[in-house]
Image 1: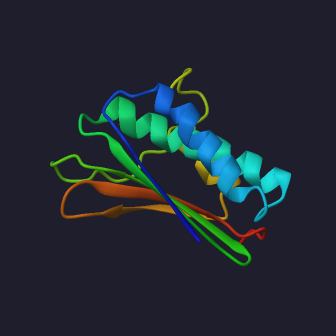
Image 2 (image 1 turned 30 degrees about the horizontal axis):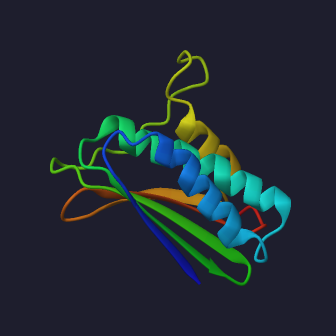
Length: 127
């Protein structure tokens, strides 16, 4: 099963809407803890994409037995940077990827011809 959403540039109210869509999508597929974690991490990635890019973002959520994959794609035309994970003392911003790294079972960044995809997976088991 798959969920797709496209968000416009700087459409920060859409973060709440996509969280709600994810919660509804996972209602009968995941437990409350995994759903809460997925919502939190999705919010971080979508917010980053909308704040740091000018072309919006696309969200794809794929659910299979024992595995949830969330992808947030931006459409920035320049070379995709290496993922930056700040240390915990970097101030009040820049902690989203720390959360992703801490709570996701796996995550990464995949360069695309146009933009990049930042993704995470929840499997219920730490690698």
